[in-house]
Image 1 (cartoon, rainbow, N blue to C red):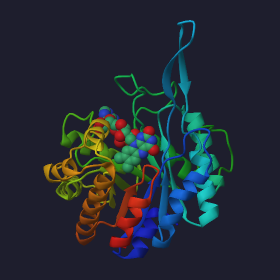
Image 2: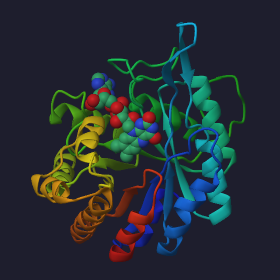
Image 3: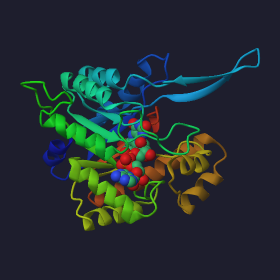
Image 4: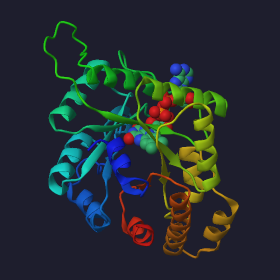
Length: 318
Ligand SMILES: Cc1cc2nc3c(=O)[nH]c(=O)nc-3n(C[C@H](O)[C@H](O)[C@H](O)COP(=O)(O)OP(=O)(O)OC[C@H]3O[C@@H](n4cnc5c(N)ncnc54)[C@H](O)[C@@H]3O)c2cc1C
């Protein structure tokens, strides 16, 4: 089922979804099933699978030489998405990214997903490579998520890159995009960020999933800003329970988000990560209940590969 149809069918009762990361190269898919299994009883409507572009590492050898290596550390998004769909019978939302692909490679990836019967996507630009100041598109690849959406919409209309193809099968992708309640890090201001978000919706995206936030007023303000700008698609809040004390510093740095003082003071009081993880769960339960009461259509949780905390939250909320 397409995301948008599932939301309509739920008639206001919030759906439960979560996001998993492909395991690091060399690991077994079992770690994915171990993350998913404890959450199955809460009847997830969708499971999202992130996409990870290549990374650059510099490796020093015994002779003192330094080698620049380009590594894809978490491959497998398409395979994992298919495995989940067929093992659990649950719809999946693979993420697709601009970075690291030219448009032919993107089209081929989309064709694979179409053949697998996967009709939902989350289309994002991807971040700059570590060490790079700015995002750089691959040669012949997309610069912005809106360009990626346009390519997906072309395929939905049966328009492939090779104009000479005849009797082409249109795809039926329902595509979501990322939104930023605290604005995207590179954007000079909220107005500009919302303007480009609207461009993604006008290009054909049908729903928005937000970056994590820890203060619900940011989500509600963001929804208001979007509605004022004429963005009328469902806006799914993304929640991440804090899991370690160090995340007080790493999450703001990595995702350009803020952590409210009340939560920070509670985490600061914790003696160890076990206590911090529990505070994270309680905070996310409080956030979830308020968001559900405020009309959020879907609750989306970032697992970061571990689901014991998401299980506690789901138990309290669904
Ligand atoms: C829910 C969610 C899931 C994510 N999943 C992944 C994932 O699986 N893999 C991954 O690598 N990353 C993922 N990301 C991170 C995402 O790739 C980064 O946040 C990235 O920096 C921006 O992606 P975007 O799709 O929002 O980019 P865009 O919408 O392209 O926007 C990027 C920046 O450019 C600006 N902009 C947009 N269009 C234009 C234009 N035409 N002219 C000038 N400026 C413009 C925007 O305001 C913004 O500042 C995810 C983020 C979220 C919130």
